[in-house]
Length: 336
Ligand code: FES
Ligand SMILES: [Fe+2]
Image (cartoon, rainbow, N blue to C red; front, side, top):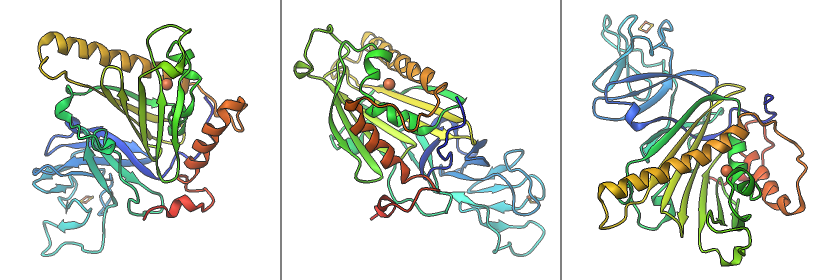
């Protein structure tokens, strides 16, 4: 792929780790949005994402920085910084430096994942990260599902927008995912920074069936460009979270999390094996998409077929609001 003409510093929520990767008291180094960052978790369990460099003399806190209770201590001179990035202790002075602050980022932890809020202008979050259970308002919880299965692909040359475009790209399902017939969209709602796309789809039967007879589908909720959650109906019950996080001007990390539903009263080993096989198949399908995205060149304007025009145009117009260099369109103020 070529470097996309789209900004790699969009505004929104982006996954930086799975919860299990950040034990209380641990510190992780990472690079996202072209910045050296650290994630750490306090002894009481609070996850923190902040810039990696100590404001004193610039030591990288990811190399030897350690968590002491609710603060992180720099390995160089022992200065301690709290979860807001404020200095709370200089061990050889009677008072801390109240003026200096390490930049920290809003964080939410949900669905076994840690999300950071990124905005180049430093604005506070103006929309919520979608929840793969609660956002669908159907009373479901993680307890109704097997523990998640995951896929992590690091440093791929792809842009988060490619992944969301996949959601309005009805034709690819037949060719990439080998569905017998082309799905049909039943909802495109791009009014706010969280958008909704529903479609009727089947993976069963042959090409002679009519889409009107299909009794299964997928509902997707896109929380900005970083997170898309889906719920399936009429097929093996599953939920997915795809999360794409820009690393630098060319590459992104891809994380995919799949939850397969438990069958009430059937919690034996056989049911679990079956669920595992379903999860593996969903991950395999997602990997087929990744193969395309990772080598794609962003086509602008694309050569769209008439039936593709509406979905892609809506999606691309909606995506503009998250780019820092975008003209100030109304969706930016849709925060209320
Ligand atoms: S550089 Fe961090 S305490 Fe000195
Ligand atoms: Fe796909």
